[in-house]
Length: 87
Image (cartoon, rainbow, N blue to C red; front, side):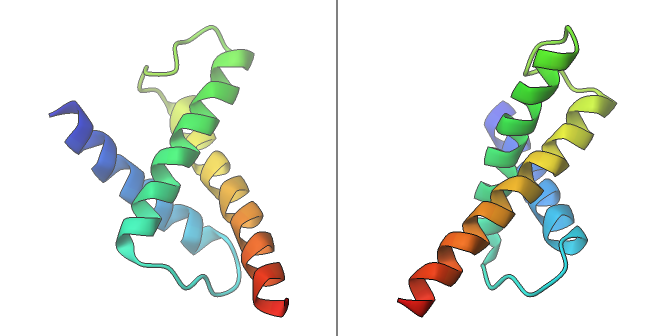
C-alpha cells in the first residue's frame, strides 16, 4: 500500500510542478508520476538536511520540498531534451 500511495503522491507532485513551471512540457502521466516521485525524493532529502526530520516523514516542509525538487528536475530534464532536439 505504501508504494501505491507514493506513486499517487508523485503524480500529484509532478502535476503541480508542471503547472507551476511556465512553458509546455510534453510528457505523459507515467513520466509525470516518475518526475514527481524523483522530485519528492530529492526535495525530501534536501529538506531533511535543513531540518531534523527523516526523508520518509510526511510534513509541510517535505511537500514544499517535493514540489521544488520536482521543478528542479523538470528544469534539468527540459534543458537536456532541448539540447538533444537541436543536435
